[in-house]
Amino acid sequence: MKKNPFKKYMPSFSEGNFWEKVRRYAQQAGLKTVYTALLLFYAFKRKDTPAWAKNIILGTLGYFLAPIDAIPDLTPILGYTDDIGVLSFGLVTIAC
Image (cartoon, rainbow, N blue to C red; front, top):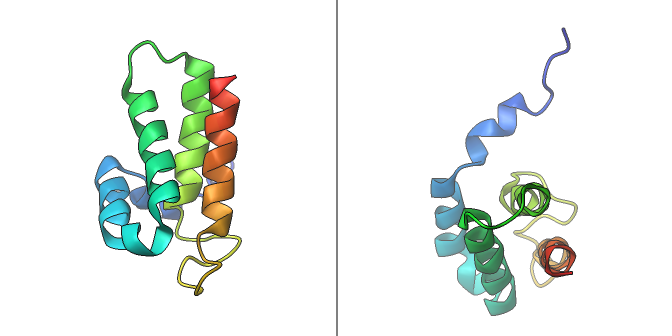
């Protein structure tokens, strides 16, 4: 049986961690990033959101919450550009 390489990151992916990241980094991440994350979060919570869309949302919000990033979030100015790109892609994908 294969070991899950992502197991060590699992504690990072929770509703509490989502709200903590939004609260802590809202000013740095910017309105567009936080707004897009919230749209996806509430779309995921809706009962009428189809399973395929929820899977995309999970991956998208998972990237937002991930402790590792293509561009580290603490990098001045550029830190959240990858996050907004992934969040926007997820939102556009489920909206179509």
